[in-house]
Length: 102
Image (cartoon, rainbow, N blue to C red; front, side):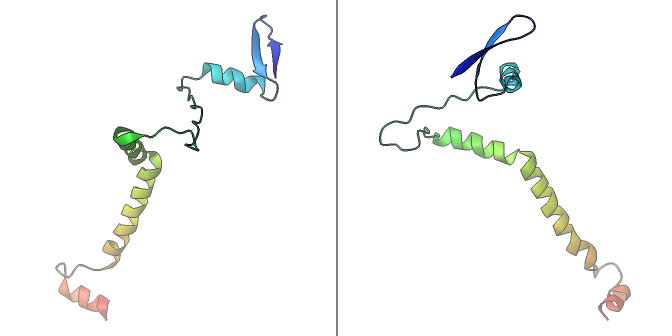
């Protein structure tokens, strides 16, 4: 189900009928690698190949270096700093610590 679109320059593009032309143009200009999905083999179910040790290591490293993990770790660090700023240090000034505890 493809229809042929012609642009102002006379170039023709084959775009599926249910996909907007601007999305198809954006995909052609993208520098992201294309993901090819393998056909499911009989009996395997999902059709996704096994990743292996190197694939798992790459996945783990990508997750670890993502912005989401960085923000979560920064949030946990800020939560860990709260008790240290509220609980007084006993070696600083014993009189002020005793006053705070009373």
